[in-house]
Amino acid sequence: MLLTPYLNMHLRDKFAFLGPGGVDIAITEFERFATLSLNSQGIFFPCTQLVDDVWHAAILETMDYFEFCNNIAPGKFLHHTGIEHHQYMLGRTVTQQDEEDLSVLVSYVTNFGPFTAASVSLWVIADQLLKSQGWTLAQLNAFLAGLAGQTSSDFPVGSGISTKDLILKFHKDTAGTTEAYFANRSTSRPALNTYEVLVAACEGLKSVTKPRILDIGCGIGTLFKPLAKRFSAVEYVGIDNSPDEISIGRSTIRSTDATLICTDAYQMPLRDNYFDAIVSHMTLHLLDRSDELFIELVRVLKPGGRLYFVVPARISETPGELAYTDTIALFKKFESADQLTGKPSIYHDQGTLIEGLREFFGGECSKVEEYQLQVNPLASDALDHFTGLYPYAMLRPKERKIYDSLASTFIKSFAIANPHLTLDRRLAVYMATKG
Image 1 (tube, helix red, strand yellow):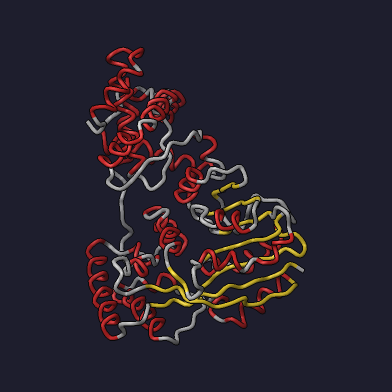
Image 2 (cartoon, rainbow, N blue to C red):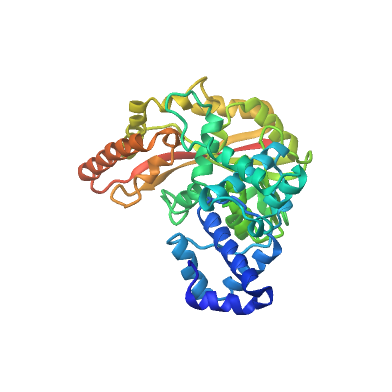
């Protein structure tokens, strides 16, 4: 029993009208729903209204509900949301929807065994699949057991997986953590984190009453809050190709002024000449088809609209920057860094980047500023600065341990040799105006 004694008694009293057997199954499936949700990195597990009613009743008993969540996943908390399955799936292709729906069912049978006649009716997708395929319960469970046997948690090293797939895997495994990390890192701009530095660069939007802003690679929508704070009100649309990131964002941002869409930046389902500005934090340099991307960004911007974005400045001058670069180079020991190489990126050279922006946007294009992301090498989470790199997602557990050990040794050595210095990563804000 994961529920506290009081919460168990409270729910049984509240739903006594279901009868003893009905209460047992409702509480059991609620516990299973919560277990999957708290350990799923943002995947949506649609249950029937009855399970949602139990969830709502449980969360009102705040302290006991908090203890219940902690019993499942220490330190985590499952926020109640009224989002429906069709709303959650907005922006996904039919194939993406099918794949995620099946992953939900596979997660269930992997953790709790086959569906029963009582449990299947409380899980929307399972019930729909039974009815649409005309299957018996035994056929459904056999199908899901077969799928569960085919899953694999890691890509093999040296498989040549594409950068796009590597990034998708990284964000599926660590949804939400990238934004949490960046938001809590100091920069060379006093009292501003790196998201706030980007927002501070958007001075041209102050003359617009309620600017329409598009966020490319929005993740969980981290930029919405500082944008809304700086400009009083915004119409914010965020796009990202990670359904896991979008799921978390939709469940945590409660504003009618924010819309998150799971889609590709190269072909967005958005109107021409609509946005006053486009923003992007540490994303554009990962999208290698820059010509296609710029054409699409220009299409959705209003005439005179501006693009503001942050990318690595590609400069290593200070001891902290050199140490950061050397620690990244450790990936070469595992032949994983090569996954992010290929043709030279337009973002590697400032002059080439600005020239490319002018070609497509036609208006004023410039580098707004450079600043440094700073990490205390003695901090307990200093290693996170490097394990957040995409090649790390490709390493098998044994290789990750080796890398972690090497990187930790290197970071500690740097801290001893440079007791008053931080590990620095230089970033740059660029701006382009649609002419």
